[in-house]
Image 1 (cartoon, rainbow, N blue to C red):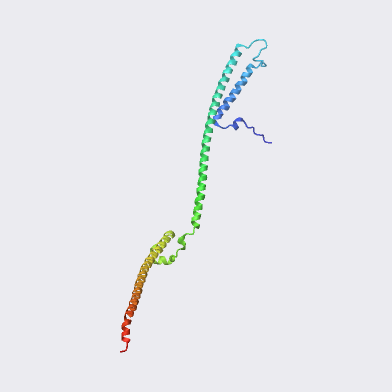
Image 2 (image 1 turned 90 degrees about the vertical axis):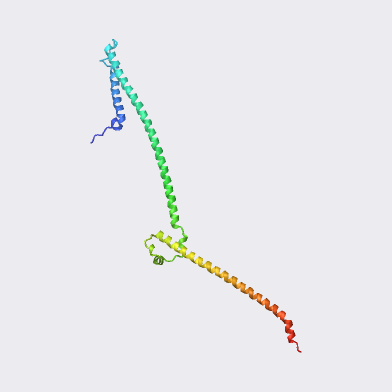
Length: 222
């Protein structure tokens, strides 16, 4: 059966900035063990039930304490640095999160704008344009009249056809206006002639009335 792999602290902690902390922590742990051995009353090499600790033991304990205090001071400094790095990382993370939120909102706005534009495009494509119902001459006939538009694209060709239709309608409108003027002139002339005839009839009636006495005289028998 294969042996089960045992994970160590170094396998879990991989951040290079934390590796010195592990090393100093291990050193401090070892120095603590050494100090405990020096002050352990059950240790026959350092303890004596009747005699006080020797000067050599006291110096060894003091030296060991200084080493341990030095390591602990290093750990406090590393801990302070780690706390500062954590705060800095949190600040960077918060700023990055704000940037992500801003970009996400911007993306949502772009999606909304895209949807709006697609709706506008669809509305334009489905719009019942008035020019589609214009009685334009067939494209083939137009190109036969104006071959210079043979290389034009569909948009330019449609504009040219509409302009041609507009020009033709302007010509027809001018012709209609001329005919309307002639019609009005003929109507006025016809009315004048009717008035002249009516006046002539009145004059004839008056002439006939005036001639009746003379007619009666000629009708008398002498």
